[in-house]
Length: 284
Image 1 (cartoon, rainbow, N blue to C red):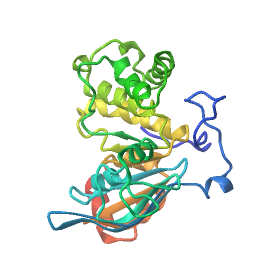
Image 2 (cartoon, rainbow, N blue to C red):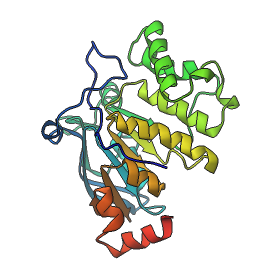
Image 3 (cartoon, rainbow, N blue to C red):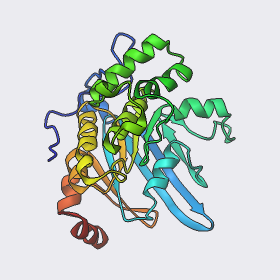
């Protein structure tokens, strides 16, 4: 169903004023390898005395797709939520595009406004869509660019219509969330996240709340984004999808990264017995 492009991503990074919000410029491999979109060092997090993340180190290059796999309760979603500070880690550091999030240079908690600016460099797509029920599809996508980015209504609507076209939802611009299928809601949620022009897209099990027949339409949109060079970190249980779109696959077990590799190595030559067991149970 899924096939990773052999031509490489279309590029990454923030568009210049001369480019549309949907364009990217392809960097060469040497330059790309030195640009780190997300850097996580010695990250730990506990809930009620239970250690959910333990000394996690992870780097995500610009333009790469990193998928995070693991059994339920392994810490996958917590790691994703820590990246944009929806969960505050107990220790460790996270940098987005070279800027630390949550803590300033003096080691103190960031002021709310400063934190919001850094957090805006990431776009989050949740399991449960989180659309505003009182706004139609178009206004769901334009609300944040107008009120957070300061775009004019005309600018925000032009961007929103482009993004809705990208995710196949332009015919539903005037519809309300209650009239949409789960797959349609998730595609709108992706457009809404993209409207903030983030440097990194974070997907937390984007298909887990969908009926099986709707999963493919959402995964196809994410696959298209990967081909365009968007930097993405994806928590998923879709093995074929992870194998097709990933540049790196990370496996979490009890809060530890126990395996990290390119998809070919991960899925055919896993080095740990635990990962081999997981794949045997979940592939197919």
